[in-house]
Figure 1 (cartoon, helix red, strand yellow):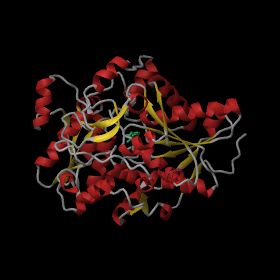
Figure 2 (cartoon, rainbow, N blue to C red):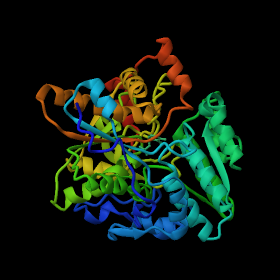
Figure 3 (tube, rainbow, N blue to C red):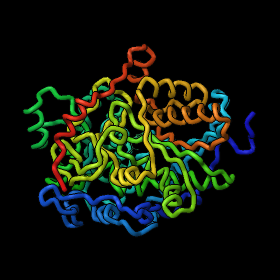
Figure 4 (spheres, rainbow, N blue to C red):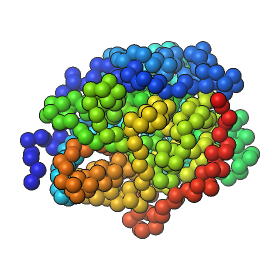
Length: 457
Ligand SMILES: *Cc1c(COP(=O)(O)O)cnc(C)c1O
């Protein structure tokens, strides 16, 4: 039987929420590659980025040197409403697996947006408000980011325009209503409200949209309306910075009980939760103070790390954003429509891409039916209905725990449980009905998208 000295939930007190975000770039010898201006092919300057992003966020985006960035009081006070988030010892899952491993998860689903995205949404809305802007524009796929941003904008009294991938807009009407309840204006993308949307509709009539396309529309809406800026919920350096609050809290909680994780696991879409969860641990690893086995888990249907290339690519379909050097499948890659597990973005955070290229993290991919098997087991023993995205991390944690069962190792496994799955019940329905299928792109398919990469350097 497990040793119950460590409680089921390790709670920190309110004043143990970190006072500053941790900027892992400060400790990286090889810094992430800079964003490039697609017109000049040169690193994008603060001036070039300012029409798109808020000033303070541009500064954070370009800041490779300051290790700590203080969390403004207004953001800290908002964090207090739903943070610190619990760190849970998964005793019941350990029991179910009969593993000697100790499994911990950091649960970020305890807020209305249902995910970690609120940690960055509130920061981005705050800086927009402070700059005196009228509002922000963004895209959302599954809807978590749009929901988190709507909540943050409602809090600071900002206008929020969300371009929601059309297929999600139609399939997830309840997400849409949550956003509208918080006052957001939600438009299915592609739409006829932007030039790029009209162009995409003309070229691909009947398209159900994609994240890359919604990003292009949101950026256009921001740069063509005075008083608006664009905000993004993942991928960017600034987002990983804000998400470091996850890892800082997790580390503080484990430190209380003298627990050092051996393996740290996170699902990876654009990389923000994984980047945030691992940041203080990665800092120690980069400074040579400790070592950790860090694992990114991605869907087999959208395998940017495990089958992508490390190259400069467009961030969006309309090619209006700066170019980012990242592990990518090509900006017009769209995972198959039967993929219900989220994590659909074609590229990966430039910070994580550099760390992966330097061999400091490893990556695995998982098929969605295996991911839902893990989700079902987790829901039944741990009680939380996990988001499909988060369930990728659950799947990998279970695999690690089963390896420990074979070897007898008592490893400490930490994973990020990024959110809840209440709005993903269509996917659960397919799983429960036995109609869910797996899709894994062939090398030939991937080669086609790769051949569309811009030729840089
Ligand atoms: C958005 C989201 C993710 C993936 O995004 P990352 O930027 O890779 O963290 C994972 N889990 C949940 C619940 C999400 O909403």
